[in-house]
Image (cartoon, rainbow, N blue to C red; front, side, top):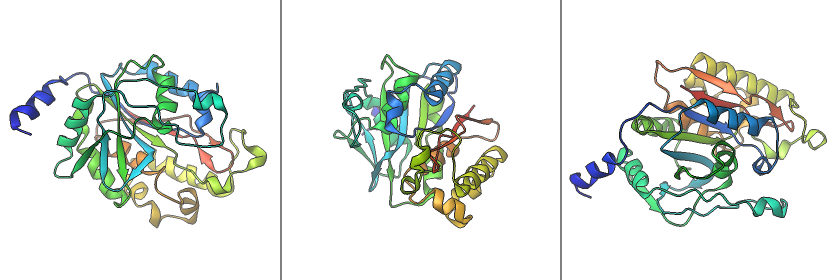
Length: 275
């Protein structure tokens, strides 16, 4: 790609008011079709921030070797789960893609090689939350995958390269869960908001404290923290989207929490907004 072509891509996204950055605790796929305080929280956030020109989502559910971005004109709605009601599989979120944004994203991440993907689409980590924020599906959405071969520090630094997109009206969303251990769900309290095992309570309290204090080094080095954190993050897939969001924060910006609840014993819906 020539320098002129790269400049033409950049010109498609004029500078605008700097967009916030979000981490959304997406929880169960059923949140896509249920009415509860968490989906209301997603709506409330959307009503408080500028309408984006486009959305870039880093979802826990696109975990790949290397980094990819969706680059098709119309990404399919991916139902990447099983055992749920037909009504959930019937949901479609027909937001357009944005191949130009995909190329701009890949350019910003150089020298990291980014593959333009035409197979994946929007998985439930993306559409189950974005559909509540922008139900008319009119805003273009692309996804960027998480390279499972790389540590948290790498992802934090990679996110920093995406900062310019926020100045061009792109809303960057990390979607996962900070506390996420499906093997230890409390089935007796599956729908109880505030229900959490002792380790989950400790993990939530510690991570919230570090988030609000700006102590990102502990969050990046979560594997060196207490046993509660090790149980809360048995695998990094749902945790790393938070690291991307934190990598986007500048020193002058504020960080706030919303949807900050434990549920089902071993999950947290805690979400983060950076403005």
